[in-house]
Length: 325
Image 1 (cartoon, rainbow, N blue to C red):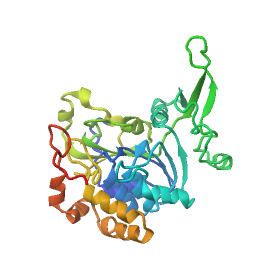
Image 2 (cartoon, one colour; image 1 turned 180 degrees about the vertical axis):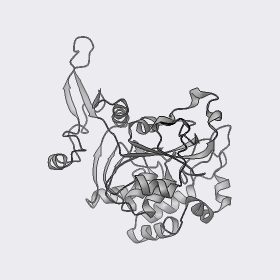
Image 3 (cartoon, rainbow, N blue to C red; image 1 turned 30 degrees about the vertical axis):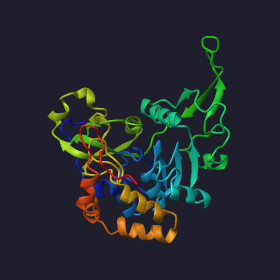
Image 4 (cartoon, rainbow, N blue to C red; image 1 turned 180 degrees about the horizontal axis):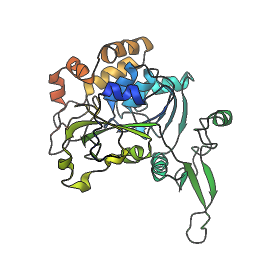
């Protein structure tokens, strides 16, 4: 790979080229934090269908993708946005209507699955979920697994500890690796080659990025490579993993991006009100997603005053005076 390769693309082009109907897609972020929302909205606008989605503990991004009719299968630990949606609303409706197939794992297991994919090994062992129904309840049927070679034959495997006697663990749980076709993450800072720096908690984004065949990075700031060479220990993802880099200020909006902006409670409350009703949700998409050609258009629609109200105090990383009701 050429070290001077410039991977900067427009978001519309990146989604159109790499997120194909039926592909296996992973999105980063955690509940209300650093969801790649600009990319999520672009996927919905392009009406991508039948996506097999992986997420750690996502919220807004997963729910809007499901509500937009983009997702047929989901593997996840948790879907919610705290007080706004303890359980994601369109996610729950799709499960109840049996239009979405879901397989659930623990938070730690999902991280291990991405880590296994990043390491190039078929599985990793853990004690997580021993004694729980995560082991017993499978979302994907045996027939579905046989018909889909990308899906492991078993959700997980419980086996005897082969080193019993050396430690006090009798059983271990083997969880299968994940290697998505595409992963999309949003970061604070990247350069044109795809070196990335995240501030605050990284969640499972690093493992997701390294496990994927294609990595689309959206970022707040696109900087010179020399900038990221200062304090290189603060960089988490090297350029070798990145496929496309897109500068999208407020690219996680309406979720939060640490040290840049907080989540928007106005958007979130409006979303929750609309998400409970199919017609109102369709109107929400018609107001907030479909008419906007770019994420900047959405921000203009929201209004700069509201964006200023959620701007983070750099000293603490969040908006101190934000009315979160």
